Image 1 (cartoon, rainbow, N blue to C red):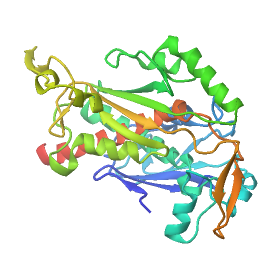
Image 2 (spheres, one colour; image 1 turned 90 degrees about the horizontal axis):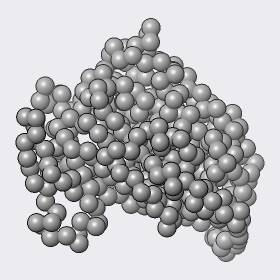
Image 3 (cartoon, helix red, strand yellow; image 1 turned 90 degrees about the vertical axis):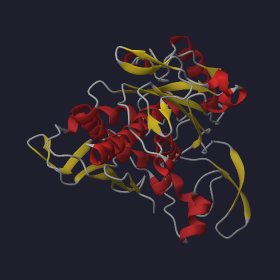
Image 4 (cartoon, rainbow, N blue to C red; image 1 turned 180 degrees about the horizontal axis):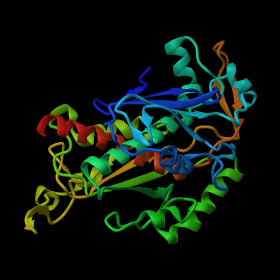
Length: 361
């Protein structure tokens, strides 16, 4: 079912949107890493529903419970199991979807592939599955800081919503600015226009998408590997595994295709005894390996598929019909996607940090 991610730092998420709960098992975490439920709760609170007027009103505290793998607030090196119970599930809101496929959802493809599906909120295809990723990433961040990169920073933010683009410098943006507004953008001037747009879409029973940008600072040189395990390839897989994602680019991305080689190359220079580049169109990765510069990438998210207006669809009996959205949904997924993007970046970096140490000491 594609529920396992990572090579050495490996996670397995489980649970359905309206089942008893969701969670994750983390395998490969080194021992003696300081860890409490509070460490995990910080990012779960940033991801949880009901946190602002522009997110889904589903009321979930998303309290993390560590069931195994720690003792006296330290990891044991054994599998770490984390549970988050579902408290505010309302599966009855999805009863009509038991016989009708929601447009642009996983309903039809799941049914066609497996011959069955959990129609209550989408089951495993729900973004609620990402709770396990965020919980696991809280551990990954601790491993990265204690074992590999004490100054590491992973900061994501909303770069654009529809045609409203934030003016953010990824080299200087700070976590406090991003978290100071409900949109989670790094540009204070873009907050009001973005909020108003999301409210307008919600009022119309519609939805809107956009782009989340992420910067990773102070990543050690050498993370990643050539050919199939390139760092940007694993980041792309991680980001495109998230619900509602439709695109990934790193560094200059698609805009770089408009430049010549002379314009695009990042010249090297020495600075304080270190190899640096005078520009960063590579986005911090060259040959699939981190080069010490800021790693900068962007992830495109589509408009939320569930909208509160009638749409054409098909029944499970393969008859044409119509369906209007029900339940509680985000009119724009981007504000809550920010910590999830950070989480997937942390999981990739932690895995590659352990791989680097295993191979090269």
